[in-house]
Structures are given as structure tokens and as C-alpha cells.
Image (cartoon, rainbow, N blue to C red):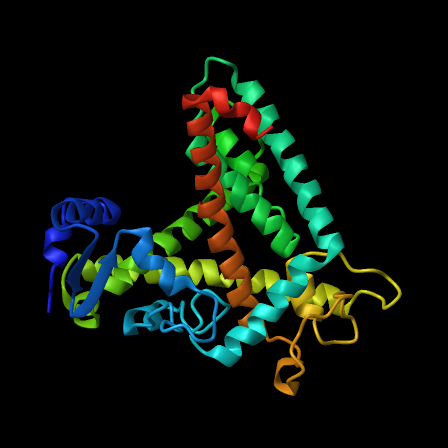
Length: 325
């Protein structure tokens, strides 16, 4: 019932796996509440699994467990989707949205503008203030991906700045807006980190074991809060598009691209879709939600961590700085 999970206590999940790697080598097996899992720690062992070929021996790269079904991260978008037809359908919209020239132009423009805003906050804090780059970059990447995917500015960067400046002149309405932004990014972080909880604890443990049950309930409440926020944005944008005159152009963000795809108001000039009639239908709110969630989840941690790694290694090896300028 419990497997190896009792050995994890006292460790962060990644630290636990690293300790097992040191002890058992590049390949070892763990059992998480009845779920057999093989851990690979060498790129040579993983390369064959990531071949982009129809002849691959590993077509399913994401295991949908009953825990993930309860957590609500299965069968939507492209990251957690194991249904080939549904995956192809969603992937074509991702491709269309990102290959639109106006979308790419807006992404670059928004990134530069947001970076300038963040730099201004750093200057206000002063040279003696120690920057927590990880926290800053997580908020920067989250706000950036949210703007280009939904067209909505979450003010995550500003909200973090004001948490560092307690004596500010914000009114109650502005403070509430800042709090809402901070709650949103914390909710997204909690959703992503909580997924592993539903992977290594089985249904019995999540529903009946004290402490574990409480944590599971907390994660599900957080999921409901975040999902409701995203669905609200989708519905509001759909209403905006419906109320926009036909002769008035629509903005080019991922959400607008999804909503208008395969409709008379389609903003995707270049089509990259399949000729299959089933793949040429308009996309539903649930499918849009899955793709937006993928964009936020995939564009927040990875982008922020990449930047922090680059900054760290450039600081440690300044002689290579000219290679990235």
C-alpha cells in the first residue's frame, strides 16, 4: 500500500531522488503507493524514449493515474493528453497560434516592456537590496506568458515589488489587486507542485490517512480556485469577441486565436491543421482551458529556471559572456 513513500519523509522529492541516484546509480525502481516507477538518471537512457517518430517504442509519454484524474490534469491540452486524436487536434491550435507573425511580434514587444518595468522596480529598491532572482523571474515569466496567452496583465511583477516595499501609498483597491495577483501565481505554483502528491499517494491514502487527506483537500481547493479564474477569463474573452463588430480587428493573443479558430472570425491567416473534418471544428472552452494551462505551466518554471541558470553560470564564468551577447 505504501511502497517506498515512507522513505521520502524529510526530503524534498527531487532531493530524495538524488539521494537514491547516488546510492543505486543511473537506473532504479521505486514503488509509490502501489505505483511501480522506474527512474532514469542518464541522458543516454532517455534519448531513445524521446525520438519523434511513429515507430517509437514509447508512444505514451505521460501516465494517467487515477490520482491525476482526480486532480483534473488528464486528457486536456497537449502535455497531459494521451489520446492521439485529441492531442493532434490541440497541437494544431498551439502551432497556429505561435506561428502567427503578429503573435510573435506581440510576444517580443510585451517581453521587452515587462522587462523594463521590472528593471525600474530593481532601481527603486536600490543597489544595496539583495535580489531573489528566482522569485523575480518566476513572476516575470508567469506574467509574460499570461499576457501573450490570454492578453490579460496579471501584475505579478508589480505585486511582488510591493510586497518588498511595505510603506507604499497604494489605496485599498490597488492593494486588493496586488493581493489577487500574488494569490494567483502562488496558486499556479501550488497546482504544479501538488501534482506529484496525487501521483505517489493512492486514493485510500489521499482520502482516509490523516494529514495526507488534509493536504489533498487543500490542493483540490486550490485547483478549483485556479481553474475558476482561468475559465472566467476564457468566458469573458469569448463574450468580448462576440460583442466586437465584424469590421473591427481582434487582438492577437493565444486565447483569441483559440476562440476564433475554425470560425468566421478566425485570426489565423496561415492554417496548419489536418484535413480530417473532425479536426476542423471550433475548439471548446474545456479544450481552450487545457491549452492555456499548458502554456502557463510550461512557460513559467522552465523559462524562469533557464534564465536563472544562465545568470548563475555567466556570473561564475564571465569569460564566456561574449558568447551570449
